[in-house]
Image 1: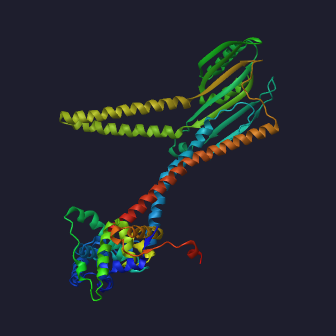
Image 2: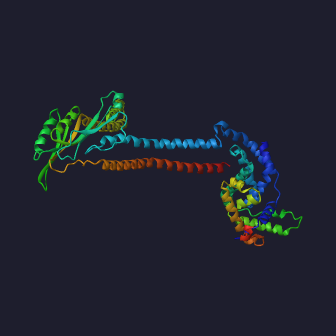
Image 3: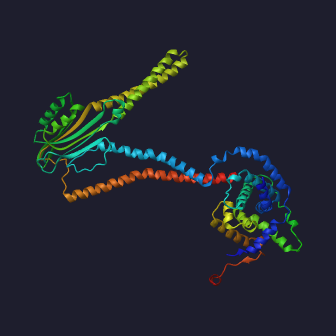
Length: 176
Length: 370
């Protein structure tokens, strides 16, 4: 049970927020993560011991989110986006950042699930491509390709029109 | 194509995700739920030593797959091998005996060689192939070996001697309780004029078969002699066993019939008895055929008048023979590869399909479990 407590201490908050980015709703995210942790704990013996537990936990979380998106959420009235962002810190009075976050959530929702998951795991959960590969059960090359595709789609999303874009390197830059 | 800046993307996502406070109560709920779940979950899992993990499990699955594929492929491969003696026993030979044979199986003896001198035409030799064997089955079950013997003799006889030869052959066959099964005489014409040829099928008791073959060769110039023997003891024993078993069942049904009280019971038992009787008669018929075939040896004698085109193939020189043997060897090797390719391909496909299924199943199970 101590092990579970450690998991919760280290990963619960981040897992809930990750699930929130995938599902787009806080209550759904909390449900999913609770279910995911219980599943992971129940089948902890089948988790690989030789590597970090983090990607495996994320795998459970992602699978639970997938399951929720496939089975539960489509069959009930969709919970609207909650007002979580109302609590975004405004100490720095970064209204632009708040607006950008809203736009980001909107853009993420428009991404296909497979792309959304890798973006969230990479840029929020801060997993490496290899760890994401373990978390989603695909090859690292697939992860890289999905990340590139997601970034391209986000760059052209209408809600993120004002967000700075990264230009592809020119030939001279590449050779220098 | 442009991509969104990673730093901006990260910051926006972090801002979006950190926009709410995560409830602390949820952790306690998870811990409590895990505690309640603990005994049940532990009990549902077996002892650890019974659950192979990781590589051990993969090895176990691979071994099981190999076992299954092996079990499927073995009879196929074995079936290929067991056909060899049959093919060997049914082969017929014409010409100078320059025919190559596959390896003989244990208990079989192959005798091959030239008999006598070249015939009048000087182009054909007599040859003889005799396949004999000791039946291991017969020894085991205490039954006398059941051998089916057949043979072909090509005879060159003098002009207008077909009828005389027929009479001679008939006398030879009937000498020891044998008989003529059929005889055909035909008259043809060619550039040299009219000629006759004939075919006679003789049956003699097994014990006289070899004597008859020897006698027939002296009725003219033998250009080709081929005899073959097949051991059918196992089929014979198998049929007898089936008949015995069916008769035992019939006796039991008759006992049941004598005790049956209702019409329904009687009809049901009668139906079974009819089926059994039909089976017994069928087996008995097959046994009779086998008995007949093993009691008598069959010899087919072809008669050709001198001066006609001999049936035998012409003798080849050393180089031609070597070339011929090489081609035959190549074809035989290719045939062997093609024969083997079937089971091998099947095993490969089965293994691939099993691999894909297991991989997919493992992935699905792992996802569902997790």
